Every structure is written in structure tokens, then in C-alpha cells.
Length: 161
Image 1 (cartoon, rainbow, N blue to C red):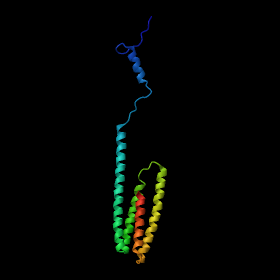
Image 2: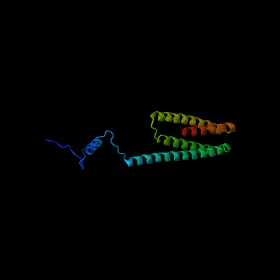
Image 3: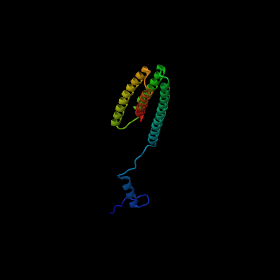
Image 4: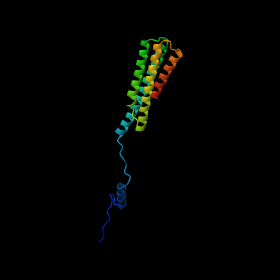
């Protein structure tokens, strides 16, 4: 008695065996969810747009600070000094508020960035105090006043670069 080999649909035993071999393959195709890819791209684009908007906002504040510094140079009054300090404060708040919401994958980079910002904040506070003293003196040399204003501007630019 002879036992027949199993055959495929068309009587070909090899075709059936070939299919069985393919279905047991070691490298099955991976399914990638297209929605996940679109969400990742959208999130990346959104983050990029937010960073660009932050940079534009900070650049605008730097320009306003430069204009107010020119006004303060010409009119050494408490009102102009107060406006300048408020602009500095709003700039620093913007940087500190936004800089820590930006996702940084490496936590050591985040810690270094925080340390840098805190050091610069302390330096800016010191420079604002020196600026206040110079405005109080009223006889302060214009070059000293300009140098202090320039140092503050440089520190603020360092905060977000």
C-alpha cells in the first residue's frame, strides 16, 4: 500500500511545501502604524515651530531692550531705568519659562543648561544693581553706563543661545 504525499491545489506537492516554508519564516514583516509616523512628524514640526516662535519673541525683546538702553543713555531717569528693568525681567522670565519646556533627551544637558541660566540670572541681577547705582549717581560716565548696558545685553543673549 502506498501513501500519497499531500499535494497543493494543482497536484504539485512542492508548491505546498514551499508555502509552508515561507509562512514559518524567521523574519516576518513588521507592521508600522502610519498614524504613529504622522503623529511623530507632526510633533516634531510643532516643536520646531514653537522653537522658532520663541526665538522670534526673544529677538523682539532684545531689540526693545536695545532701544530702551538708548533712551536710558540719553535720559537717566528712574522712569526710564524702571522700563529697562521691566524689559530685562520679562526677557528673563520668557527664557526661563520656555527653555525648560523644550524637550532635551539627555538629562545631563538639561542640568548644564539650568546651571548656565541660573549663573547668568545672578550675573544679570548684579549688573542691574550696578546700573541702578550709576543712574543714581547721575554723574556716572556715559561710557560706564554704556558698558554696563552692553554687559547686560550680552548676558541676556547668552541665556538663549
